[in-house]
Length: 622
Image (cartoon, helix red, strand yellow):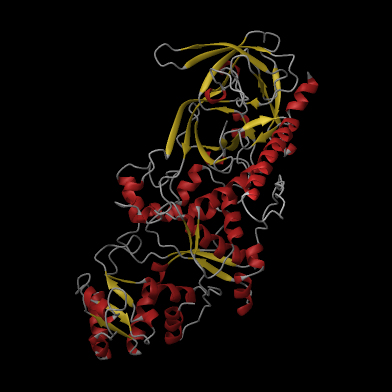
């Protein structure tokens, strides 16, 4: 019996069928497939004149991929070049989000680059809330931003607010007017667009606003009137009188907003723009590394410290939307569960789905940093997650759609403990015991009512192995529901004559032996196309009806309790020690199915699992 248990411990996944099989059986199948491929290649060659090239032998994939160096993107390439332009210690960087929405996957790159760059060079990174638009800012966004930064494993040097500098920014705006480099404009949006050459900049020659010729005294008085609330929103702007560079055609520096500020209340009626605030706050905080022409123009003009800014390409993903306005529409129409829906690519949604923070850091590092924008396919992101989880989480047996199998001659094994490793590749994860019972549950997809030579799992008269169980089982009969036509029970016996079955399947014991019920949510892409924004009828007409598939009566083996107790899996980034992490840090591979994490809807008595990612892209079963 011990020998049989040892032999089943070395099972391998047949990625083409999704079955667990012995090493010998897998080799046999691979040889058969190689022959079939060779024959097909030979046929293809025969149809062409070039018969000189032999059919290529399929290459053997490496079983394990090495972990990515988390600092590689700072050691070479763009970021290394940036550091060498102005080598300074200590290095101070900043991550300056606007607290008017939840961060998305693109922000993960900005967090990783800014915090990671400073940490690599022994410096510090500020978290600065660019809170200059009271019309859109809420406390929930401030809290969520800090939570995501810490979840990714970073700690801000200081948390600052652009609003801390409102008076200093106002004084510099008056100084800019005094230097004849700013003026109060009362043009309409339409007029301003025409000054810039129309909607696309090609409607006609560009020209400067007539208000740019106002004397300094008039501009100062109008600006102070703006501050005192004598203008309504959209009636007046302070614009910077910049050079003729198309990148900065007299950008706005201040606007009137009739809304109390979250931190300063009614103290201000005017608020600085991003283009005015960003570079000056960088200067106040002594930021070293951060090239926008307007950024450098303003600091140089005002004679303040000039930080070095270098812009890198943004990160975006196909097959989804990142627009706050469009995501809000999905939330309002209840197409998704909320901003943290696992199908969204907000960071709180990705976190809830169960994606580990360490996988995101590796993904960004693998992409590297250049000046070009990156538009990445979802499947590439999924593959990065899959590679990370493969080496960092334990394995358990989960049954999505259970059917009971009564093994009629299992009395001797009933109630006996069977030892299961948490990972065949990582012995340090340890093992756990599962009680075997006379009645076990297998997945409905692992049984067919009629035997098929191409089907290697359970069917009448066919034998299949149960993972780590000493003997395979053979189905003898089954019963069906008269109304639904579904199989309700299978009868089987141990097949002690067959030493090595062709396939092995997962199973779970009865609830009395520790098996738990679970609701399993299988998440697929929220949209049907790669570019939902361009879908006929708009992105709401592109919703995938199969984006969430729920299995309400799934069963998870008793080892889940230990996995839950030992979370986070893995201990990394913002989940760096035992007990540090939310429910989503309870992660595991459900053998032959997918990677899963515990959902926040779970309680002590109710288990809800989210699929993080499939075991393999487009894995099919035969």
